[in-house]
Amino acid sequence: MATGLLYRRLNHVATGTVDTPLIKGLTTPAAGADATGFRAADPATSLRDITHYNNFYEFSTDKEGVAGASATFEAKGWQVSVEGLVRKPRVFDLDELLKISPPEERIYRMRCVEAWSMVIPWVGFSLSKLLEVVEPLSAAKYVAFETLLDPKRMPGQRSQVLDWPYVEGLRMDEAMHPLTLLASGLYGRALPPQDGAPIRLVVPWKYGFKGIKSLVKIKLVPTQPRTSWSAQAPNEYGFYANVNPQVDHPRWSQATEQRIGESGRHPTLMFNGYAEQVAGLYTGIDLRANF
Ligand code: MTE
Image (spheres, rainbow, N blue to C red):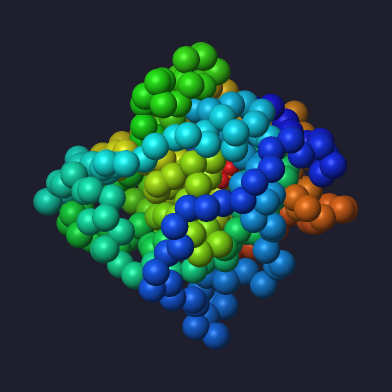
C-alpha cells in the first residue's frame, strides 16, 4: 500500500459533483443515540474530498485518479450472493437487499492504515440485518467478503498490484456488531463508483482496508478467511486491523492521523474512538500479536 501521507489539498485534479440518486426514506439517528457510536460529533469531511481522495485499486492506485477512472462504472443488474454456513442461502438482487431494513444515516470516523482519516455520513443498515435473513448456522465462525472480479469493468484488475478479487473477512461477532454497516450511500445519495458502488462494507473501529467495496459475495465459513492485504504483506497488515495508536505499522507511526481537509494532526484513538462499543469483543486477546 502506498503511504499516501502527503495529501496536497491544492493539487486536486478531478472536479465534478455526485449525481447519483437521492436515497428516499432516510432515517437519522435519534438524539441521544450517541452512545451507540452511530453519529460521530466530529465535523464531516466534504463530499468533494470523500469522492476525490480514494483507495480503490481496481480502478487506480492514484487516490486522486479513482474518481475519473471509475466514472463510467455500471452497476446495473447487481447481485449479491449470501452463502456458506447458513440455513437459507440466497442471491439477492440489489433492490431486494436494500429492502431488508430502512436506510439509516451513520456518521462514522474512517481511519486509513496509511494514517489519514475522514468523517463520512454513510447511508446503510447493520450487516446483522442481512445475516439474520439467511439464518447463520452455529458452525459459522467467520464471514468472508468478495469484490466483483471483472477486469473489463475494473481496469486496475489487469495489473498484478493485488491478487484479485479483493477479499476481506470478519469474525462472526464482529460481523454481527450493530456498528458494522452495509453501506449503499453517502451524503444522502447512492454510493458513487469510487466509494464502492453499489454496496460496500464499513467497519468503523478497524482500518479502512477492512471496508471492502463493490461486494458480490458474502460467505459464512468455519475458519479465518484469507484477506487481500494480509496475504500481500502479512507482517504489515493483520486480519484484525483494529485501529490502535499503540501498535505502529512497521514503516510508520499509528499514533496520529491527518484528517483530510484539515491542517494539523489528530491523535489516533483506540478502536478509532469506538472502544466503548467494541472493546468487549477483544477481552483476553493480545492486540499486539493479533494486529
Ligand atoms: N475495497 C476494494 N475492493 N478495493 C480497494 O482497493 N481499498 C480499501 C477500502 N476498500 C479498497 C477497498 C482502503 S485501503 C480504504 S482506506 C477504503 O476502501 C477507502 O474508502 P473510500 O475511498 O471510500 O474512502
